[in-house]
Image 1 (tube, rainbow, N blue to C red):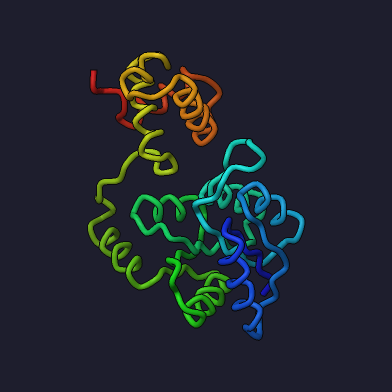
Image 2 (image 1 turned 180 degrees about the horizontal axis):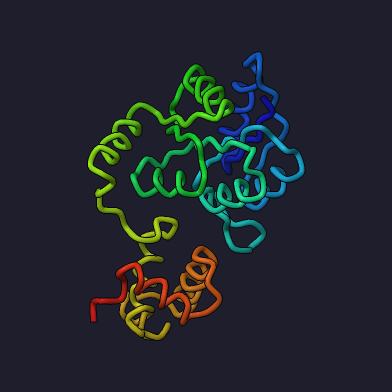
Length: 219
């Protein structure tokens, strides 16, 4: 199996690569420290599997491409490449957002080499795999008919969702800054990140998406 490793922490990435290369059927063909590089290398190196962290940083002062969005891009362009998430994030929002983006597996950091090896073989064979703790929650969600309450736009941070809610209520950036005790620049950055993550072109489109999802109804 040809594997691309994506993680922003050099020491963890190095250790993971060493562990993977010790497996007899794994060849690590590349490594990426951020989402943009992950998408580029996935297209260039055509790996069988991408081991993907979710909390990825911005690069060169540009917008960040988190692991969920990077997964979506990779799967969209290379559906034959399996994405196995390996991350510290274990919340339901992150799990379901990753699976909706096309990931075939989800492990939490701390998984041992044997668990990672089993997961690689599973996703490489077209199966879906979760770590034990997450699998129980996923099964419970399906057992309840998928009725578990989930926050809209799980790709957004809590602060970005709060800003979007206020945008959907019709507040200007200056009014949002005053309401949240933030600088105008910080609010502009949050709004820009929201537009990028939701792939909307302008404020009106963002408001429409937000209201469709139930935001902006607080008056």
